[in-house]
Length: 39
Image (cartoon, rainbow, N blue to C red; front, side, top):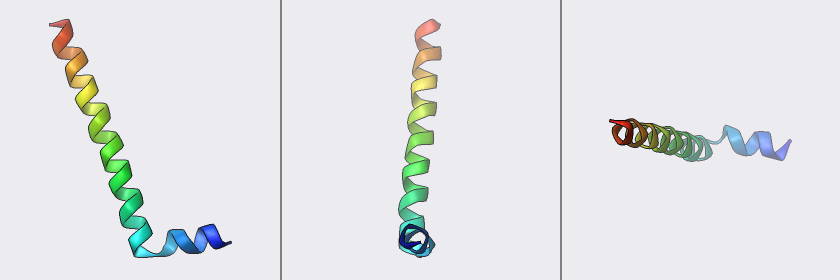
């Protein structure tokens, strides 16, 4: 239950969204580098 309560706080949501965005950005950068290496 405590984990769910922690997730509900806006601060925690901001951190989760930030980490998610960072992972997505890193994925796209790696993908772009891989494509450029093939060319």
